Amino acid sequence: MGLRVGVEEEFLVVDAGGEVVPEAAVVVERARPVLGRRVGGEITELQVETRTDPCHTVGELHAQLDGGRAAIRDAAATDGLRLIASGSPLLGRHVPPPITVGPRQDRGNAMFRGLHDDLAICAVHVHVEEPDRDRGARIANHLRAHLPVLLALTANSPYWLQRDTGFASWRGVTWQRWPVAGPPPYVVSAAEYDAHVDLLLDAGALVDHGTVFWDVRLSAHQPTVEVRVSDVPATAAESAALAALVRALVVTAGEAVDRGDAGPLLSPDLLRLAYWRAARDGMAGHGVDVLTGRLHPAAELAGRLAETVRPALADAGDSDRVDAWLAALVRDGDGATRQRAAAARRGELGDVVDELADQLVAGVPQESTVA
Image (cartoon, rainbow, N blue to C red; front, top):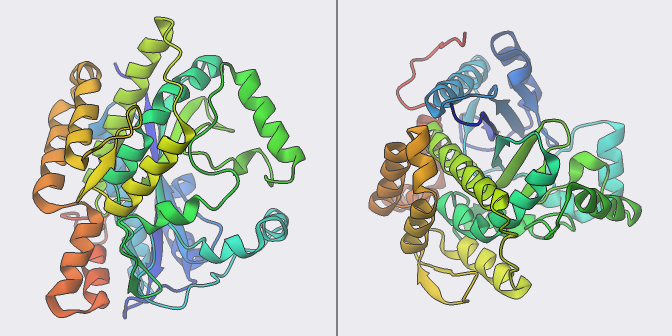
């Protein structure tokens, strides 16, 4: 049986007209009887987060993702609200976003200041079981090379402040402003990882250990490697396929670590360039090979990644799921492409919000319940 995997998804609360509204606490309160600890708020009052339990199979995970989305959809509908899965808001006054209240948030406001103006962004986080923190730190060295491709695959935030940014993942650009975001440092042990976190704490760049926002991190609360580079996908099926791919990457990287492979030492400039290109183009254009610096079609880089982890996908029974997702991205476009296509039909961003709200739980009846 494969390593257990869990997912956290973040969503935006919108009103009937499609504008983001600070009503997350209302939705969480109404969804709590169904989801319990699997639902919560985020740092802004615009966002709701759902979580799955650790799952052995991606089929089980997909069912929990559907259930979580259905529960918050139904909870929001009670008050005439809706939820959308988009990496960034489309309509409404959301800069600066209303920050939730508490001493931890106060410390963050004092530390990060105007950076918090851009916090109305939504990601998906994939946790893969790894109880050995030394091994997890070395696995992260291998994952760093694949982070730009994962960002391109999930690019779903082309709009910001009611305008098209020209990027596929504006969230990906926004997130790089933080001093603790982006790829993690290359480290050889958990002790070195922890020492780097302590350095950041001493320098005043972290509120606490939970605010390490690297795109791969050792979870502060769970025995997992957590991959957090991706925009939240529009559909639960996409999040499930991403989780399958990330788990396969962790398995493959773990096998390399066990063989004594220390992972590639990447050029920081090339890695930064690859991130920028992935955020700009998503799957619709080209990406940068972080080992050579050369441009390749994003679909080609994604296909290469899938082949790299093919044995792990096959062992877990996830090959068909991931292959179908990649084929759909080539056929229909990434989330950003689909958002733009919805806007182009009538020139209305409200149509994009409507489509995202409809896609939140495709095919799951209203007033669903979760076991």
